[in-house]
Figure (cartoon, rainbow, N blue to C red):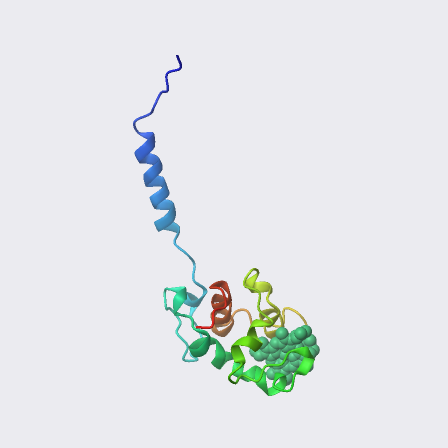
Amino acid sequence: MIKTMRNPVRGPATLIACLLLFTGCGTFHPLERGGEADGLPTAPGLSEDVSFASNVKPILSQCAVCHGSGAGGWTYGGGATAYVEARTVVDPGDPAASLLLAKASGAVSHGGGAPLPSTGTKYATVLTWIEDGALDN
Ligand code: HEC
């Protein structure tokens, strides 16, 4: 008969290690970097705090200057259909690679330059919104 040896320390130790792993590392939140005084929340703590209507839409309003008329194949008027328009260039499965961010940050050559540099708070806000599933919130 096989006797299973059970180390009495192992159970609790594993549990503590798991707890430390989850609480100790936490989740890095891009908005905690802050830095830009543009009136946007810099440290909401919870990613749920990023809303399309309140945070993302105001940032994207500057894109409408060119994209309102469909420049470069992306139509973004920033009005009532803003969310639907924004979602066409957003990929929640690969947030940072979303065409919206790649173009707006200039990571991919963009006719409109780099209005949202990847080091800025606006970029971080939009990225967090996409990472959260790019919801119509
Ligand atoms: C000064 C005008 C201008 C502004 C402002 C501008 N863009 Fe553009 N954008 C262009 C032009 C021109 C193109 C087409 C050439 C290219 O792909 O770079 C383009 C292309 C794009 C594309 C690619 C569309 C496609 O289907 O290939 C995306 C996405 C995009 N822009 C996003 C943005 C976002 C997001 C903003 C605002 C943060 C923005 N743009 C602001 C001029 C602009």
